[in-house]
Image (cartoon, rainbow, N blue to C red; front, top):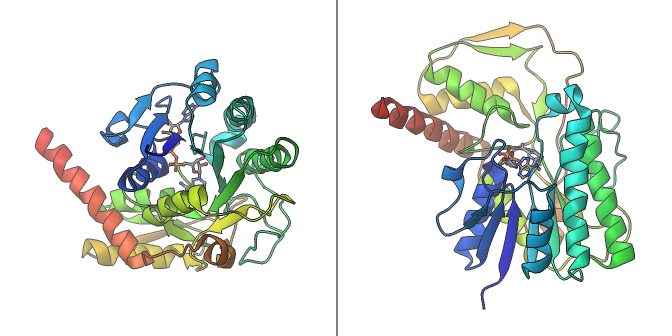
Length: 323
Ligand SMILES: NC(=O)c1ccc[n+]([C@@H]2O[C@H](COP(=O)([O-])OP(=O)(O)OC[C@H]3O[C@@H](n4cnc5c(N)ncnc54)[C@H](O)[C@@H]3O)[C@@H](O)[C@H]2O)c1
């Protein structure tokens, strides 16, 4: 019998690519998504979509009774700025929603492995010197980062006390086809759309602020490996946490030039004042995922940005024809 995975947030960006990978590997894929930002058209035809909120008793019942081998939990309020504006809503979705699912896994006897999407961008905060290693201190600067860290702490607790098998993948800034402008790598979507509109790009500060941009197909593959590889013993918080990035810091101006090459046209860059509170440098060490999950990113930043830009361009062309 095929193995079964439930993917929350499977109508979203990372979730839909993750669903593709599990389907390719012959798994049965079911999805829970309330379509808050996800779209039906992202859901692969072979996957079964349940339009449910992760905070609902229906979602808990589905997970408890569904005999899933794996839960890949990606559904979230994922906008850092929104978490600052409304931390209660953020915590309700990102902490209480996650607890609802962990309790359902416990109620079902704990046989479902949990793979959780945490963040390597927002969890370590500003007091470390990158590249951030999994065991570095965590001092999240936003309610979003605090919620991700809280869920990791709960998962460590569920592992130790209730024997659940859990792993947290701390993604860098994920970009690729189907991304929207609100995510941690939103700049790629924003710049792509500006270039397609023949508009100048706005860079805040000196443009030297760096991020660890990781291609969505590589992240989806990491989710599959997190779901299927043997994990180290559950001990401290970080024992089963893995950074999923590239280990490379890319600055905003370099990113803009790479998109310019992908578009094959010159783009004007305007500089605007630095935004308060913006992190200057952020990138992660990926040695642990290489050693223990056998995962390495395969798509270079230039190649990934080209694929992403082409996707935005093709979407424009289709929308244009539909008018
Ligand atoms: N994109 C990134 O750069 C990045 C970086 C680090 C971590 N992450 C994490 O990865 C996960 C996926 O992010 P994404 O970029 O694909 O975002 P996304 O918004 O495309 O996907 C999230 C999905 O969750 C769904 N959702 C939201 N609230 C829900 C609820 N209460 N019940 C059910 N479904 C709900 C949305 O409709 C959406 O389809 C998130 O947990 C995010 O925090 C993303």
